Image (tube, rainbow over all chains, first blue to last red; front, side, top):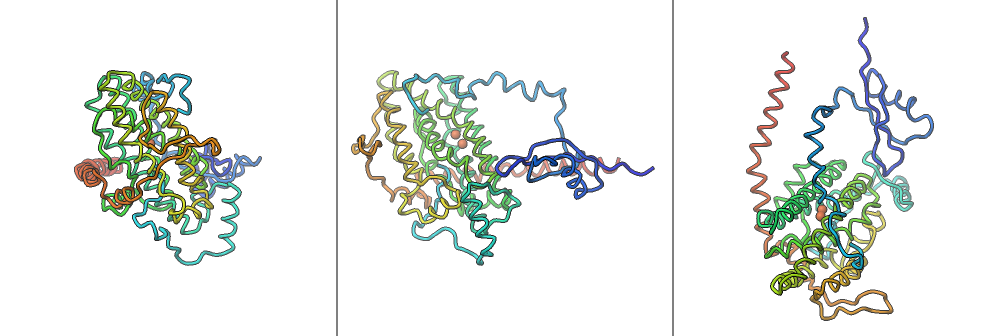
Length: 94
Length: 332
Ligand SMILES: [Fe+2]
Ligand SMILES: [Fe+2]
């Protein structure tokens, strides 16, 4: 049985100035083929002007079970937001 | 502004053009930039553009990192738990800003280690403002209000700078800066409405931070040798003097609103210009601080180098541990 082509994650930059954004994945034998497959799959309607492909196996993802300890601590730190500070309305540009 | 080009010699242009660029590619590049297109890491760019950006972005990054020192100095002495949590969060943000910017500079082909080496050896500059001491708690208020306020003034137009990764870092940073300025102003507002002694503290902090804050925007336009090219390349979107004036115009009423005096006897609203006229800035002081003669320049750099050297074993141990795990995983 032949080996399955590895999976690649595809990122598209819609236009210069914007960051590449994850759009999906493709199977391909190597990076070059992955770019071509990504082009055919994800940019047929002028969705972008630049592609990144990254071997899916290279992505280290956070564990959903850890979401609490990773992200909840931000919830009670409202002072990281400008609206936490009350500044009278007549004081402008701040 | 963490990003004015800080050269200690005001006469010499900072960028010496290297080999002449291919005129066709150069013209195409200039046209793209002139049309407000963004340049991304894999696009062709003139060497001088790349070098100027590396210098500007790394200086900006160094300023964020060194900027943590004067404020970090007050974390343990903040007057309440609330103030302490806020200051900690602010200083943490500044560390993050440094990281965004170092990462943006790395897309241009330099490395973190190279940039840090340049800072520690004194070749790279950082904003002169951080070489002034933070004498009282009111200084923390003045820094947030004035220094972060000046940084915002400078950074908002840079969200549209021509280099994509820098512009995107700036968008993140600007979003985070707003709380920095508001917490600083809140401290000043509270002190100014407090006891006579607290109000004096606030006034003295404003007295000491006002002029250095104005200097943050960099030398006057006629003494800013690389300004024209940087403006053309959209690495800079407004001139030093333009942003400085804007800052003064919005900040003076904020001082008046809390009954503090801006320490400039020449300050006067100019009806025809629709702006404040202001007094002469002491540029000799500015250049002296750029040259490293600021009150705390040595102390700041010693603190940085010490942190870097004393952290070396942690960096090494983490790498050694990761290597060992890799070898073990490969063996299984
Ligand atoms: Fe910052
Ligand atoms: Fe800040």
